[in-house]
Length: 313
Ligand SMILES: C[S@@+](CC[C@H](N)C(=O)[O-])C[C@H]1O[C@@H](n2cnc3c(N)ncnc32)[C@H](O)[C@@H]1O
Image 1 (cartoon, rainbow, N blue to C red):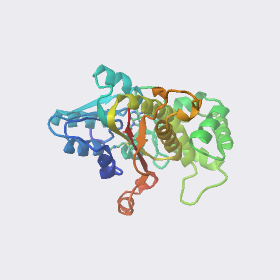
Image 2 (cartoon, rainbow, N blue to C red; image 1 turned 120 degrees about the horizontal axis):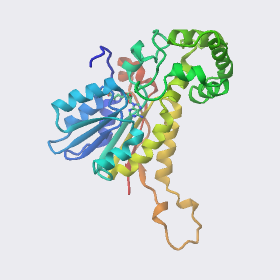
Image 3 (tube, protein in one colour; image 1 turned 30 degrees about the horizontal axis):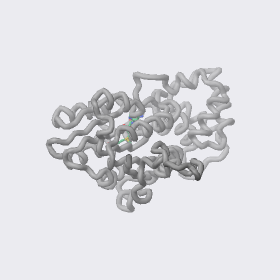
Image 4 (cartoon, rainbow, N blue to C red; image 1 turned 120 degrees about the vertical axis):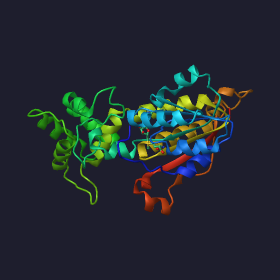
């Protein structure tokens, strides 16, 4: 399936370098997308190596299947990375993964194709699901959620200051007519937003909040990080690229918590150190951002931040 929309991979070399690919290792790409990172990982693997890709999106899966047909070392799975523990257990891969990469959020084709319903710039059906065969669409959710629930989503996940006002405008308008199209919703949100920011569509934050909620992005991330730690082999790398502060906070706190261990919570006079309190990850380097050259070629890389850690035990 080629939708005609493309994705420019962010931090391509940096992320794959950070994985420290071993030619005969088994790797995980939790967010296959259009396979930019996956192809470079495959390029560094030898004939004994393997790569397992995950994505929720049917168009990403179609691209992954085409790649799997031409390269026997690659397998693609249509599943959330939140469920990777089950998938890896079924494949006997727990504790055997040499490195895992998550390039979070949405792909450019999801944003650019109005038919996917993520775009406030180009009108389309109000869907916003990465996997349109599961869960509820944005239109369905907005038709039944309370004003308080909608305001919470705009505020917590969109960091929208005028969340309540905007939620009330949505609830008021839906009494006349349900929301079915992205441009219709964007217009109502724009009118309700009293403080337009220069160079930013006034519906941007609310749309981000909705998208994160509809796809359970933060919940999936928390589950995925916990599961991936179990799946890595000792010395295996975890590489995560985030695109907004809510994601990055979860990644940063997870890595720090696992790198610190919880030894400081133990009573000082305890004679033995309990293994359960020892650190499980070691942080590798500082957070990394896209270079000037990359930003010139791909402005979407401007909010990307990459964090890397290595499994200790
Ligand atoms: C930024 S894109 C990845 C691009 C990819 N690295 C490339 O080079 O083409 C993010 C992808 O992750 C997928 N995705 C987001 N959350 C997911 C989840 N919880 N489980 C599986 N896939 C997810 C999206 O559908 C999207 O295709």
